[in-house]
Structure formats: C-alpha cells, structure tokens
Image (tube, rainbow, N blue to C red; front, side, top):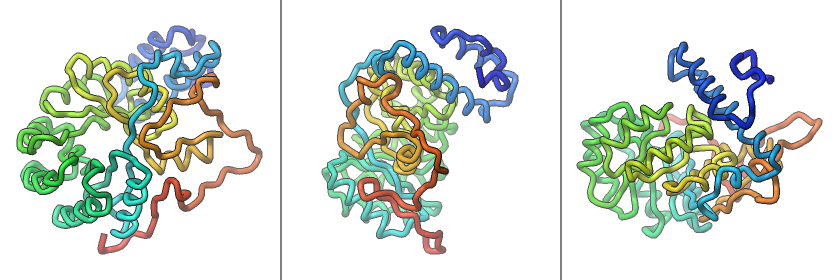
Length: 323
C-alpha cells in the first residue's frame, strides 16, 4: 500500500478487516504525542479503506454502512468574525430563504460586540430559523453565563463550545445556567473516544460533535454514535459534507450535519459532485459505488475561485481593525 512508509503495519492489510487495520494504526500512534498529526493521517487512511471496500463490493458507501435515514437535516455554517457585518447578515438571510432550518455563526474575540452581532443576524433570519453561535472555546467561565443568557433569549438558539471542551466544569456551568431549550454543543476537538466519553457526562443537554477528518475517521465516527446511543445524547457532524453525509445517515443518534461552504468550495473543485445547501440533504447516489463522487480527471492545474457561487455565498473581505 502507498501508506506503508507512514504505517508499516498496513503492509498487505486486508481491506475486509478494517477494524484490524484501525487498531494497528491506533497502536502505532500510541508511541506519539496525542493529539497530533497522526490523528489526521489515520482518518484519511481509514476513510480510503472504507471507500475501497465499497468499490470492491460495487455498492454505495452508505449502503455498506447500513443506512438508517433517507435524508439528513443540515445546518448552514459560515461567517468568521473577521467578516464585516453586512456580508455576514446577508449570507444568513440568503440561506434562511433557502429554507435551511438551522444556521451557525462565530462569536468574536471580544465579548462586548457579540450581542450586537447575534441580534443583527437574528433580525435578518427571523425567529423561525434556529441559530447556533460558536465561540471555539474562546471565553472563560466567568463571562460565559451572562453572555449565554443574553444570547438565548431569542428562542431556537444555542451555544457551541462556549468554553474549551477540555474545561468540563465550565461546560457544566454553562449547561446548568442556560435557560431551558437550547442545547450546548461540543466535541469537535475530542480526538478520541475517551475524550468524547468525558463530554457526555458534564453536559446533560449536550449535542456531541464529531469530525471524520480530526481523529474520528469512519470507524471512530460509528463508535462515537454508539457512545451517544448508550448515553442518550444526540450527535452532529462537523465540517466536510462530502465524506460526512454517507456516514451520518448510518448513525441512529445523528441529529444533523454541517454544511460548511469553505469545504464545499474545495469539494466542487476536486470532486465531480458537490452538495447544494438544502434543508434535508439526500444521501449520495446509491447507484454509484463508494461515497457517491469521483475525483475529477483533468490535466489542467486545479484553481480555486476567490468566492463561492450564489448558492453557497460567503464573503472573504480583508481583515479590518473594526472586526
């Protein structure tokens, strides 16, 4: 295999024994400092093994994984805090008109402007659309409760990683102080099942996240879904939709998946299919073996546009002191 220099244990591995290959790679990573670059290498290989197995059997990946859902609810996510206010608001108004039931925005580096940012977006999308606000763990425990209280006053809202996912007591504090209704979401930086398990206890209203590209891979993603079943916790995917959708619809506890425009931009350049933003994204083409897409065959150098098409609009202005 081409990956043998990175993982010699995979030399002559059996593609029909993926759990064994996964265990061998994990054992190799135990000698490294974790989490680290190895936790990005293993997911790439694990995903490739699952896709190869599906192609050998001439079935869709979603069929191989035993599909549980016909379609997957999705939420639209973009809008870094470096974007000026108008494009951030316009993008969400545009997506809300496309009947995406849930949208997500980022919180800022300074707490004070956040309430104004959230109010502007909420005013643009209305009360019928749910809104997640992702802090990426930027806040300490003390400013979070008041900020969360101000944020969740509009109905159908919820914070994502308001404090670091390693601060279990802080997550519990936020979960306990938040009014009834919104979920607290975390887990995208939990690189293994042990870290994911720690998150299911402190947050009784948690939605556990998983990212196939960050240490979860296909095998780990399915294990994390099983963990959510055991703890009666809902589950959500994070980032690249092209590989997540076939896997997500195989998860009994999955609540929704992320539609991330930056990822879909790259996918539209590399793959022959890309997913449009829709309220319920259908599973990949069941008549095509593998994940439902192929790498484009081209002799021309790949180039990436500096903006997304209208259907996946996101603005990329320069950084400014104001934002």
